[in-house]
Image 1 (cartoon, rainbow, N blue to C red):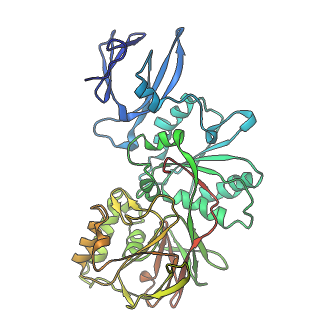
Image 2: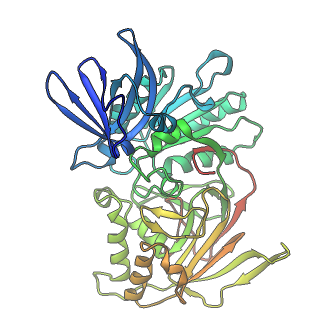
Image 3: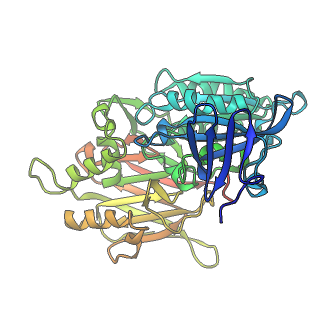
Length: 457
């Protein structure tokens, strides 16, 4: 039976609406124009008084049939009444603390638009969906920052966000970005000598390619998820890891052609993944303007070229020694060395999914801080493709005999590669080239200096 509203319809002006199964069905009595709103497309319902009538304003995301989430636009309708079931799920009568703009409990709100993220749709998502959403919530006192280069977010973090945090100011940073923007914030805050500050809250609106953090915390489970999380979520500390490198390690820049220093004692922080082997190589090789046109498919394309080189060369076997730092059943630390020196896939991860449906670590729980290793040695390229394909089938790869899947406290890799192409390490999408004879040592980071707004408990 359909859930009807006030004898199957409600009125405000010329608009008549009724509930039919999982849709709000509306018709304009003047134009006869019809609108069907899926209940799952509703972002929130706000109390609304108009034309001396007390009613509600329904905010929802409208997507054209051919368009994806990135092209959705926020729309609204006014109605006189709604069923209690709908109100209990979506009604917002007051803003959460992290969006509080009242003078007595004021929170600085910043919107960061990463124009270079993913396929470059962050600005349109802001204009078409986020900006009108904030307006309907009564939020107009916020700062908008549009990135001008790959360094903009780090500069903002150093000059504004970190300085305000040290001054004791509560901040909410609405970040329209992929994992790269988040790791830029992490890098600045964890490299600060001072840690006595108010933890900023990060509200992630995912606009990247892989969006590992967003996929792992449910922000992409539906087109409305990031917006409903902004309203209904709570701040949860973000776990992270540190990756210490040998002195000659350098960042790659300019699509791999340039190099940049990391620091006098190279140390990089991350919250998603650190890898070597096929994963790091495919991330590095696909980080070009040409590859980025293909969105997430760029990873599969780069992987195919690495496993089946068009030159006809053999698939590379990555040479190095790997030591795992673990805890025994009594919590005592010990070191376990992987026996073989040849490897193909080496990845330590804090999240469950690296992209949509790519469940690399099925045992990972969002933001639980557990670091897990996924590893396999040299195998035929067809078998490697099969194993990686199983990650798209609910993480079935971890049950394969060739795959090592285990919880670790950290790991160390000593590289035995002559060609620097095979000494590239990926940390949350950033590529670091290690010098010949160099190493990297990864450890879970005990500090948690940023919060993520999330609905995961």
